[in-house]
Length: 161
Image (cartoon, rainbow, N blue to C red):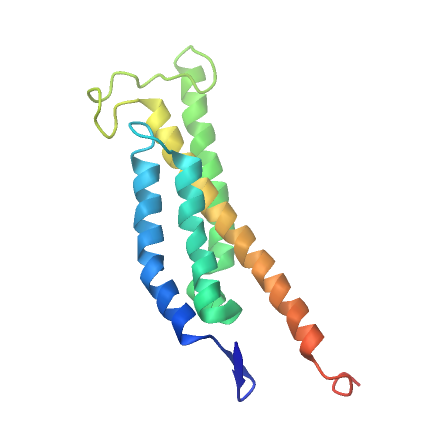
C-alpha cells in the first residue's frame, strides 16, 4: 500500500484480483444458498461465501472503499430481518399443530426441484440471508477497527499535541 497525498492507495494487482473475484464470490455464494437443499452446501456456507465479498472489497479498495460500497447499518438491520423470517417459519410449525420448525410445507415441489424440501428450503434461505448480513457486518466492523488502530500507529508523535 502506498500513500499519495495522504490517501492510501492499493496495489493495482490486488485491486484487479478483487474486481475479478468479487462477482464470482457473490454468484457462487447465492448459488450455494439457493441449491443447498438439493446439493452440498446451504444457507450458512453460502452466506459466508457472499460475506467474503466485504473482505474482497477491503483488500482491493481499503476500508474507505468497502465502507462506501456497503452500508454497515443496513447490514445490521437486515440481519435482524433474516432472524425474524427464520422465527416466523419456525412458528409456522407450531401454528399447524406440530413442533417448532417442523416441515409443514413438505408437499411443495417435486423431488430434486429447487423448492422441494418445504419449510427447510425457506429456512435455509433465511439462514443464508442472516449469515451473509451478519458476517458481512462483523467483517466491516473488524476491518474498521483494524484500520483505526493502524491510523493511530502511523500518526507522528508531534501531531497529537
